[in-house]
Image 1 (spheres, rainbow, N blue to C red):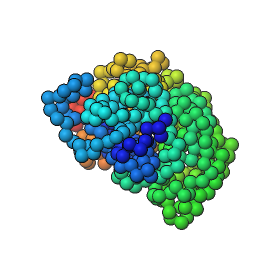
Image 2 (image 1 turned 120 degrees about the vertical axis):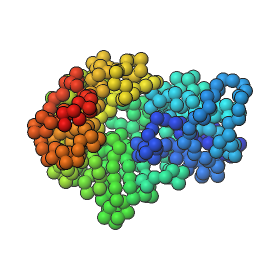
Image 3 (image 1 turned 45 degrees about the vertical axis):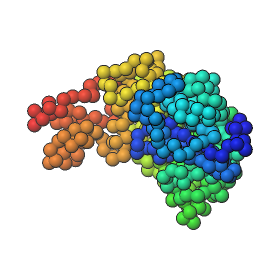
Image 4 (image 1 turned 90 degrees about the horizontal axis):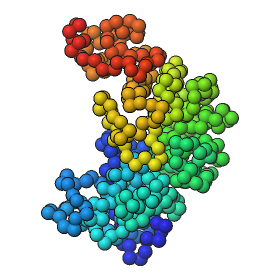
Length: 437
């Protein structure tokens, strides 16, 4: 257990977020904030233990960590901070190499200091994590004492806070590891005393399943009226099955200030009428169609054809799509590159037996274009227009046309309301268009 490592000899603890391939602009985004480390920081501070949070970046020089000596010294911002314990967080299993790199770096730098690894990868694959990274111990699941505390948001530059009203999930979806990481279903009946910022992001895996959800929403409604909160969002989708049984919850979500609601469509296209009813509940509650997003997992059991049919349904309903490319829960690598148009193989990343590399890339591009069209309420997308490759006068004219009118002049015009085959040509030479002009 984590608490067993917090002995009287521990005076300083280094908290490390590995250099996961997160875009710089998303480093402090609500999807990637190292919330576990921030909670541990608060827990350690209560014990008067000094802490330091490092958003780790590997040294530019190539280091062989198994060597006993190096040809150069490592000097960086941690040099003045000598930790008695190092805690490294992990996220997805397929980003395991970044955890390994961080562990080995700090085990070399501080040879006699224990290194612990916790987080999603550590909890899903503890044996692999211990052996692969070389850490001293793997910490499973959450740390009970730290869960009771307000995270140390002063360590990061954010204007929002992350909240859980539940732990675990009432579902056991095959593509999700929540029930493994958090096997116990726990519910809070109040969160008002945890509010420290005006923007709230809920990390619940199934917020509406909380047996006290109405009490929670009533608290948020009151806080919004008092102007103590201004923005509320759920990172995960709302369970539409629960919402259909309790339709009044949709209005409460709106009154509580929730933005960009999401619902999941995990199964076949035959569920379309069922999903439409869920969308209608949100619309009737006051949400606009283009604000609503449908979670859809691809590169999974349903093939490209069925997923594209689902996408077209979403276009007809005017809603966006939050897509998720499936990776197995025990996948320890992912070298997928969206720029490699010549294709990759299963040696690079997971490709489901029902999918091909070409279909995965095509579907992802379809989703991007789809969402642009929904947000701007237009019926076609053109990369030429988006990248301003068309003379301004022509561009203005084209934007006033519909898809049927513009497709005669713009070779890359794409509409979300049409089924697009995977082999359909996506790329073309811009010079061809210029020659046509």
